[in-house]
Image 1: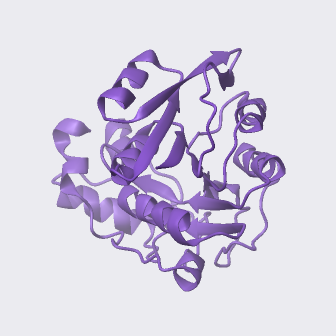
Image 2: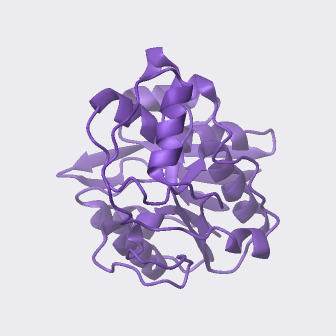
Length: 264
């Protein structure tokens, strides 16, 4: 039996665990939350408790086993760099995948790819750097665009707050949870060399066109957009060129259940 460990049992980590679940794998997941630990075990996974002291994570109880794959879905937080040092320093594993963010890139007027300049002071990029230095096994860094998925869509925020939306002509960069999971699975199964990939749909409508039209389609009032085009346009094609991953969805194929009025 192979052992997979997910560090960060949140919105993405929980869905990933459900996708990976099989009779051929032991799925382990870590959390600081006692209720989540119960949920992990009730879903047929193995839970690993994590302590959080002064915003720094450390293992409470770590099984003495070798993990074939480790997937880190932790968001940035105060103390995360020290936490990564604590967590990874104690682990034995053969491969690591880290879900990073396209937010690490410096804004540019040209299409941004994996070789584009990054903001080295960005905490998520510092997480990448820490993982590179702490990992002796092959690693893959997956830089995710803005998230769409169950109970998560930027339009929900815009409809709640009803404030003017800045840079209405800026391009939109999004990716659905289902494609995030599919990409992670491909990396776990096929990719063995150190690598960095963007994950972003190839369509980049303007914020005004995309969110404005979608709001009207839902029967909402017209959103108010301010002038400006300050933003990024992310190229997510490298992963499709170098692996068997393909984008299964489009920015225009939205699960309406994620946007129901009673969920906003």
